[in-house]
Image 1 (cartoon, rainbow, N blue to C red):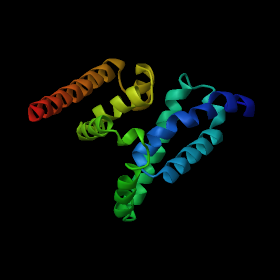
Image 2: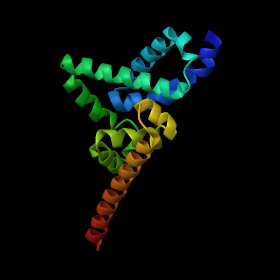
Image 3: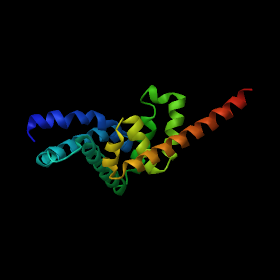
Image 4: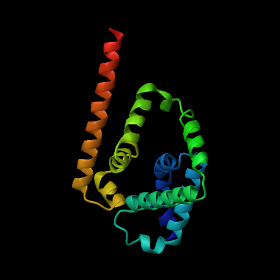
Length: 171
């Protein structure tokens, strides 16, 4: 893969994977570093990328793995307090994220089983297709559909429960 091909086929995904990296690492700076480190790894392996059938899914997988490695490294070094602090401040950074409904949905998604939360975020937030999610998670498309269906059902049921309770309180 030439430099020009890399710029056209890989680099555009950097902005697509950033939200996932930010969700995983909480800190915007750490997310930028993880995406940059991932792009450097991909650049080093650019010759093998030409054999890759789904570059977008591969880019997501590389970024996800770099983020997981970073989380393991930070946890081993005792940075749990730093992550908790960034988690609290990150909640206040965006007007969109401060809306009540979005906050409730975020809390519900955080309480989902890890595989369901990951799939709902990749599909509904990152906008990945089912086959791309399956490639990233190295699993079957049918299983991804089941996970997404279960996750959405749980979110819907919990939201309905919350809003029914609030409606009763107003009466």
